[in-house]
Length: 491
Length: 102
Image (tube, rainbow over all chains, first blue to last red; front, side):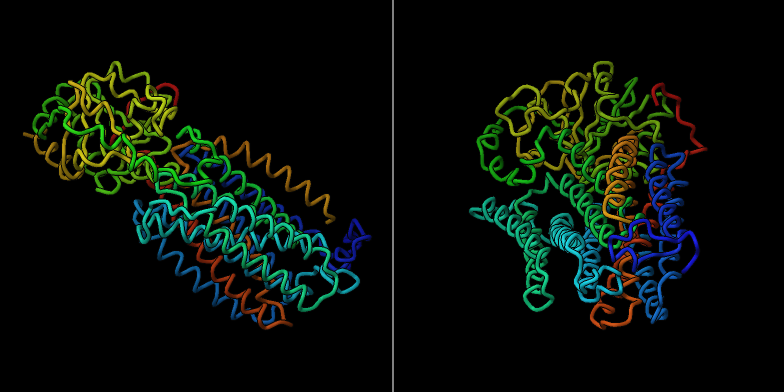
C-alpha cells in the first residue's frame, strides 16, 4: 500500500486518505471503462459487433477481478457461489429465450440492475466503513449521502418500473393504460418529496434512527413512484419505456460509481444512461410524440373509444387468396416486405424468409423495410429477421427505402398497420398524425396480411389503404398465410 | 479522487456515450440494449465490496444478493447479446446483392 507514488492527490478530503490505493487499481478500472466504450463502439456495424461484445466481457472480468484482489475477502466461497448461481441462471435464460420475447427479457434484466443498485446503496448505508465513505467525524459525507440516496432512488424506480414494463410486455398484465385520478399531481409530489428528503438526508449529521428513517422513506417512495410512472403508459409506447428504463439503470449505476469513486462504474453509467436516452429520443421521434406526452401516459385509451372506430363500418374492400398473392408476387420486379409486431406474434419470420428466397430465385428483387417503432423495442424486427437468416443487406430503414415504393410492384405488409397508415400524413385529428410512415399506397399493389378487418393497430385508427382498389387483404394467421403463398409459389 | 475529478470523468463519459451511441446502426439497437444491460451490471463492484466485508451481517447478505442479481445480468446479458450478434453473421451461401449506401 505504501508505494512512493501512491500519494492521494487531495488530502483535504479525509475519505480519500482512507481510500489511498495503489495506482494500478485506478488504471485497471479505467481500462474496464474504456473496454465498455469499445463494446458499444463495435455495434456500429454487424461485422465489428462480436469483437465489441468480447471487449465488454473483458472489461467486466477486469472490473470484477480488480475488486476481488484489492479487498479483504472475508468469504470468497460465498461470493463464488453467488456468482455461480446468478451466472448459471442468466446463462440458461439467455440460451432459452425466444427472440420474440427479447423485450420482456430486457425489461426483466433492467429490474435486476435496479434492485442490485438499491441493495448496494442500502449495504453502503449499513456498513459505510467497508466502502470507505466515512468522514473524519465518523459520519457519511454529505456529498456521498446525496449520491447514495440518488442511486438508491433511481435504482428503486428502475426496479418497480421495469417489473411493470415486464408484466405488460409479457402479457401478464393488460397493456392498456391504467389511469389514476390526479396521477400527475401524485407523481410530481412524490418526486419532489424524494428530492426534499434527499436534501434532508444529506444534512442529517446525527447517525441514528431519524437518519435511517429518511433513507428508508426515500427508497420506499422511489419504489412506489416507479410503479405509478409506468402503469398509465400503454402497450404502444413500450419501446420508449424500455429505452427509458435502460437509461435509468445507467444513471443508477453512475450514482453508485460516484459513491464508490469508481471510474468503471461512472463511465459505464454515463454510457448506458446516454444510450437509453438516445434510444428513447429515436423512438419518440419515430412516433412523432414528445417524450413528455409518452411519460404522461394514456396513449391508446381515448382513441379506442373514439369516432375512428365507428368510421370503418361497411366500406368495400378486396379480399385476396394465397394463390392471387403468389401470382402477383411472381410477376413482380420488386417486392418490399414491411413486417410488424403481428409477424413476430405469429412467428412468421422463417416462412417469410422462405418466401423471399423463392421469389429471389425467380428473379424478383426482395427488400425488407423496417420502421423504427416496429416491434416492442428498438431494433426488435431486425433481430427477428436476422434470426430467420434474412441477409442484413436486404433490410432497409424508413428513410432509405421510402422513395422506392413508387417503383415497387408489391408492398407486402405483414402484421403492421400504423406504420403504413397515410392518416399520419393527411389527417390532422389522427392520434398518429405526424408520425413518419411508409408510403405503401404508391406501390402498384399493396398486400396486407391481417387476422381480421376488425382490429386496427395500437392506435385504434382506421387505415385508408385497406380500401384502395389496388389493395388486397389477405385475412388469416400470418404464418399460415405465408405458408400457403409459399405452396402456391412452388406450384 | 476528489468530487471534481469524478464529475469530469462522468461528464466526458456522457459525451463519449452520446457520440458512440449515435454511431450504432439501428439494426443493432436490440443488441445495444442487451449489452448496455450487461455492462451496467458493473454495479457488481459495489456488491462485491458489500458482500466481502466483515462488520455488518445484514450488509453482507444484501451484498451477496446483489452479487447474485448482477451475475444473472452479466452472464445473461453478454450471452444473449452474443447469441443475437451471431445471427447477423454474413451469410456465405447466399451472397446478397451489393447495394450502394450501406
